[in-house]
Length: 441
Figure 1 (cartoon, rainbow, N blue to C red):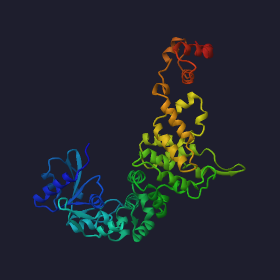
Figure 2 (figure 1 turned 135 degrees about the horizontal axis):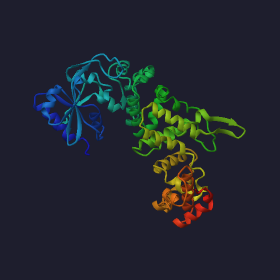
Figure 3 (figure 1 turned 180 degrees about the vertical axis):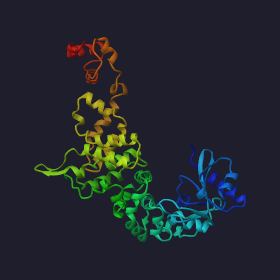
C-alpha cells in the first residue's frame, strides 16, 4: 500500500479552492515539511462543509460529520479533510460537546501545540502562522496554543502527546506548558486505556524514547499511567552485574539502545523485563537478590497490558519475553534437546535482541548472545524441529491407551532425537518399549 503523497494532498487542496473554498495543509505534515522530514500523513483544513467535500471527491468516508471531518480516499490512501471549526465546551476531557464552523484563524487557535498550528499552501509553500509555530520550530520548543491548562483540560491526552512530540523531535517543552502538565497529571486517568496505550507505544518505538520515558517521570505522568515502571527508581542492583546503576537507569539505557522503529513487542518487553525487581528485591548475606523476579514480572506485565487493553496475542508475546529473559544465563550448559527447544521458541529473534540489549546496557558481556547466534547459524530448521519419529497413532498401534502418558512418551522421544541418540522410528519404538512396556494395555 502506498503512503500518502504531497502531490495528491496538493490536488485535494486545489480541487477545494477551484470550487470556491479556502483550503490549506495543516498540522503535523506542515511541521514535518518545514523540518525537512517526510510526513506520515497529510491533513487538510478548509472552509468547505462536509456535504461540499463529499460532493467534490469520488471516494469519501464520513468519520465525524458533527465535527466536520471527512476522509478523502485517493489511491487507497486516506487524507483527512476537516472544516474550519471552533470547539465548544469539553465535558469528558476528550472531545467538545459541539463545534461551530468558522475561519482558519479560529481553527488553528483550538489546536494543541503551536508547531501543529501552521497552515501551508502546498503548491507555493506559503505559510500562514497565527500562533507562533514557525518561531517554536526554529527554537525547537513544544508550546501549548493559548493557555496550557485550558488546552489540557479540553483533551487530557495532549499531556502525553506533548511528551511524545518533545522526545521524538528532540524539542524542549515550554516551561509554562510543562508546569500545566505537572499540575494536571491525575486527569490522564480519565482517558481511555486504548488511547493511552497508543501514545505510549508511539513514544517507545520512535526516536528519543529514553528522553520520552524520562519526561514522563519528571512530569508525573508515569506515576499515573505506569506506576510499576516509576517504582524502578532507586532500586539498586549488584554492581558486579549492573555497574550502570539502579533498575531505572538500566531500563532507560536499554530503551535508548532499541533499534530504529523497533517491533512494539520488543519495546514493551524491554520496558517491562525487570518490572518484577522492585517488589522482589531482598538483601541477605549474599548481597542484593531479586528472587523470582522474572516470574513476578510476567504477572505484572500481564496485568499492565490487560489494563491498557492490549490484545491477548500481544500480552502473550510480551509476557514470554519478560519470563524468558533470564533463561540465557545457562545456555552454554544446556543439553542439545533443551538448547534446540530454546532456540526454536516463537519469535526467538525478539528474545535474542532483548538479551543483547540487556547485556550491552549492563555488564557488556555478550558471550551467551554470540553462542546463540552461532548455534542458529549452525543448525538448520530440520535440526531444530525435526519431523516426529512417532505419533499418538503409533503409540496406539503399539498397545498404549490414549491419555496423559502420551505427552510424556512423545516428549522423551523427541528429547532423544534432538540429543542425537535416535534417528529412526524403529529406534524410537525400542526406546519406548524399554521404558514403558509395562504401561501397555
